[in-house]
Length: 55
Image 1 (cartoon, rainbow, N blue to C red):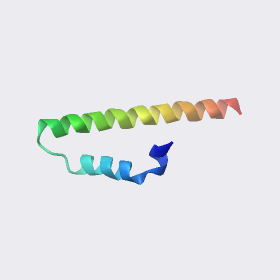
Image 2 (spheres, one colour):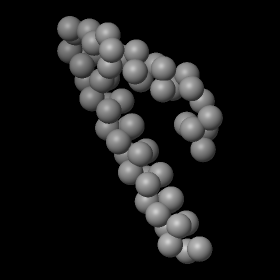
Image 3 (tube, rainbow, N blue to C red):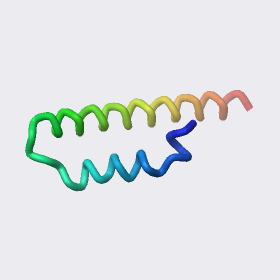
């Protein structure tokens, strides 16, 4: 989807991970980004494995 073709999202995600802030809100944003990233990764893995097994 758009996540794969949009490098800005990845650069923003890695920028947040690389330069973590000490504020609580930034930490919660980090956790939200991590959960979103993991959820998307798992979703794409499931979609890919389904497509692979259907062939």
